[in-house]
Length: 128
Image (cartoon, rainbow, N blue to C red; front, side, top):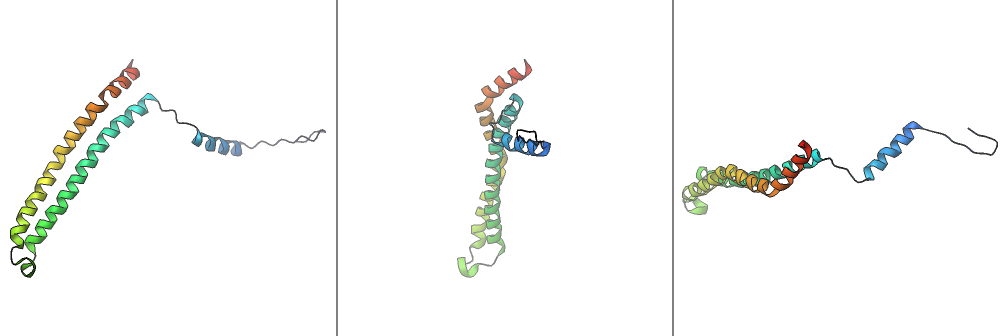
């Protein structure tokens, strides 16, 4: 709209909404207490999962190496002792795979002990 002084103004709701959404991406995030509690809980379980998965994968690879040594003909390379090397290597792999779950439980317990004061504080604030 123009008036006699030469002032012009146009309003676009879509443009304002786009500007506002871009602006909100650069504002500091305001986390509520429940979101903080979820992040704390997930951080403990994530670390435990990472350790147990890593141990399980390494164990599976070692187990596969042992199985491969037992089932292949490497008599020329190892002088017929491939099976006798493969059996202990496979057993080590089995042990590593079997330890993945206890490692998960141990790491999870330690992480929960570490974050327990923060979790208890947040839960009391949320419940009371």
